[in-house]
Image 1 (tube, rainbow, N blue to C red):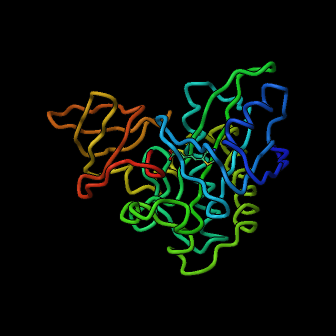
Image 2: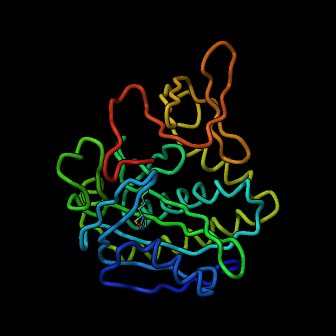
Length: 259
Ligand code: BTN
């Protein structure tokens, strides 16, 4: 594997794989170190939301990366992670997925995976922890979220094989991360992401970011991953943070449903 030397540490239970890996990174852990836990007692999602993580119901995974690409392109790390999860679920989970900007994997318009990328300072420089939570069974999230969340088990109609999905994920992360670091690779990541996301082009959405709320039609993504939103009057807004909802659905973000 040209850029990653993956090594996996396994735990029965952790508060959060992202938090534990950040601790190890601050002690000098190498790029490619990954953590998997059977359960998380304080799993975290984007925007300070909780990520429900009961024992054995999900794949709770984090990997340490020390990217050399310019920091303003680091949002593409979540793009490459979403592409990798899509490959892994297709190959080892029997599920085809859509990507909701910036980094939710959906199956049948319901969320099956969330990604939380966190930049950290370490003694050997700035790094990023990419945390991935895949719902393996319906037990991964509260029953009242069945209208907005789904699982590998439900989407494939088969018993999910966590180890096979994990192995496929490591292979796919290695491939996509290598591409991201190659000359011209960032453009290829954006193109691949756009080809796999129904949210990239022509989707009527509402975007909320704090007190700001916009509605418009998506019209592609920028070279750094920002979502282009045509809000009318020939105005194109560049969205770099926030929650995106398809206007045709009335889903609200709750546990395991944040973007
Ligand atoms: C989101 O959609 O809000 C992102 C969810 C990310 C959850 C994963 S599970 C493994 C890793 N550890 C955490 O505490 N969070 C991420």
